[in-house]
Image (cartoon, rainbow, N blue to C red; front, side):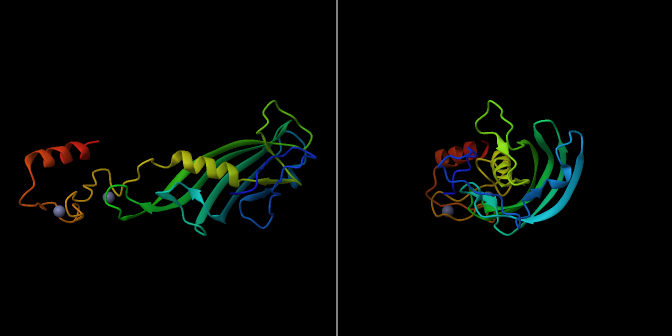
Length: 190
Ligand SMILES: [Zn+2]
Ligand SMILES: [Zn+2]
């Protein structure tokens, strides 16, 4: 459980200040507060822990390629761009390891200190720094398949003995009934 990232000034809620050493933390100083000033950032950051869901996620320490535009607007800094991440996980059917990549779109307005929107959850610039981690976390999780598969037509495991049916397509058991195989075939088409 990470600390609550709640920006209420003067509240007792614990907050985590952006760590400027993280590759996911962006410096906004040179943008100033002049609307229209634009800065491009391309960099590779190390993935923090815990981005993902149980079956699949971004391996901690793996490279995240960021390609971002920061634009100063009246209320804050608008960040748009993409992050390319590695994915590691396990096939939900055959349990074999999966490795893949994903490109996620990022877009978020980070408010300047003192700017208020109606949205309590609005992201903020703190000490001239933007912490992309919460945005990245949400964007990656939205992109992940609920049921990750090693390939779309993964045959899964034999329900009788657990053999991997991808490696052994002709696999069968003498006592298997037609009904069982019909059921399996229907399941595979999902
Ligand atoms: Zn599989
Ligand atoms: Zn079997």
